[in-house]
Image (cartoon, rainbow, N blue to C red; front, side, top):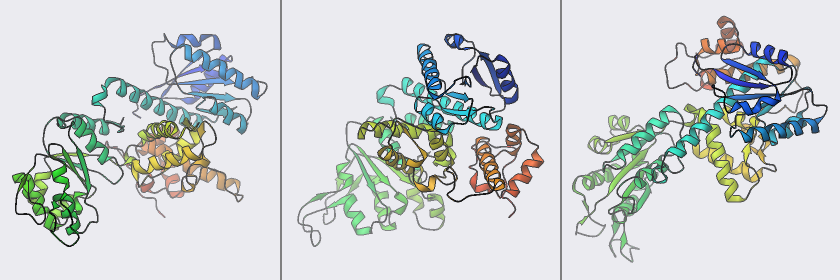
Length: 477
């Protein structure tokens, strides 16, 4: 979040003095408007956007009163056609009531007196989720049905640049090379480019070159004549022939054996090939899209990939960044998968709880979007209620999010809380220590000591795309 960005908070409370105290305590970066319940309809006409709502329910005498007040408040919000995230302030710490309020639509709840550091983080996280959801709605409304990139969702700036370039090159019949780690969505992007091209009425033929022996890969790509080898009892058309007038997508092209690389180069140059066991050349008209998670230029230097083929494939290159470099999209992608699998399985799970979202955002995602999709699919199947909870996620994502089975000392609990707080804030600030110290309202020197004392490693903080004035350095063990 940039320093000039202000989060505008609507604080609905009958205690104006309390609202002003909380507003001052939140400090720079927050602008709090204090109102009573009768002013909710004024949200529509206010000159500044509402990024989040604080709802004061401290006066509710019991859980039923709090539920009723929240329901009434949401009824009023729906009449304004606005849906900002709502954080409830309760009089007592009641975990069961908090869960009930979240099920009814609240983003989260805090007890009185609110922990200001926790409240700052909740408001920032709620604002970020609200912003990317709004961007997603706008993106869907602006794109005509034929222009959507299918299931690909990207609201960050680098993903939007990739999407814009994909839309620009799709109508042009040029070879495209897609790069990025496994699971980032390269095959979906290839399909989207095909559907946006003039070849969309013809076939999209995918083929994975990964871990195939040369003779099998050659047969798959070029086909064979009857009797070409033992077991060839009938003519078989290869992927090139099937993709004629359409698009051929070669996934993991970096794994293609060197012998086949020469044959692929010939097809690209001459647009002709022969089936195995045939002397007759076949002419094909295809568009080629390739993808790889490997560095082809480094493979060229090591003699593992033909240089002339690399230049033929690398006409237009599109890169899909890993999920850990676009954490702002995790909540939106997860919600997208929840909605999709909920419809598919007839599940009553329609959303994720704030604790589950935090667990997803804290995870490193080595399998990228594909892993996130599988995790959400599992959670939708296991969920018992309308919201996916932390216990519906895999055990390795619950670490540090649930109370430990064994007892820990007060000092251990405080130390763990500090560590999670600093790691999350550093991630939100792109690893910038100066910004992190400002957000946490601590001196930079003290933050440096905490990072070293808590053994926070640079690998735990995903670097931002933009340059920051100071990046996190490895802690001294």
